[in-house]
Structures are given as structure tokens and as C-alpha cells.
View (cartoon, rainbow, N blue to C red):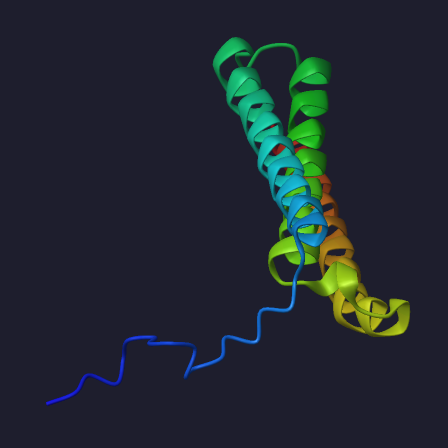
Length: 125
């Protein structure tokens, strides 16, 4: 019985029409994204280990920094691993902008409710 899952004498073409220069560009891009995401993750973990909850201003800055770094990581993941960065600008905006508006809306709701709860707590105590 002959196996049909093996590639034998180019009977199954792989449609690989890339030259070595294109491969180097792709590998460089993969290394860049890997290093960037690793560095951002290391910064987030380092901040989580070093800073403790204490001063209100510092803790607020740390939370906003975490939020910004997380959004940068999410953007790079979508743009590189989901190949959205290679699409036309209109398509990219049509996919990304609803999420941006949704995140801004959720942030607004969280801040509004948080401040409202703080005001109610201050009135009760």
C-alpha cells in the first residue's frame, strides 16, 4: 500500500516561491515581534514584583501603565500573528476601530462607576 501523505519527487508542490532574501525579512520580523512582546511582558512582570500597593498616585500610574502595555501587546499580536498589519488601511481600521471604541467605552464605564462608588462611600462614612 502506497502512502499518500509523503512528499515524493515533487509530485506535491508546496507553492513555496520565496527566496532567501524574503525568508530573512520574515525571520527578522518574527524575531522583532518575539523580542518586543517578551520585553513588554518582562516589564509588566517586573513592575508587578517591584511595586506594591501603597501610594495612591503611584498605584494609579502603575495600573495605567499596565493597561497601556497590555493594549500595545494586544495590538502587536493582532497586527503580526493575525496578519492584519499587511492589509489595507481601510480594512484594518474596520476591524480594529470597533474594538478601540469598545475598550474606551468599558474604560469610561469602569471609571464612572468607580468614582460614583467612591462618592457614595464618602457620603455614607
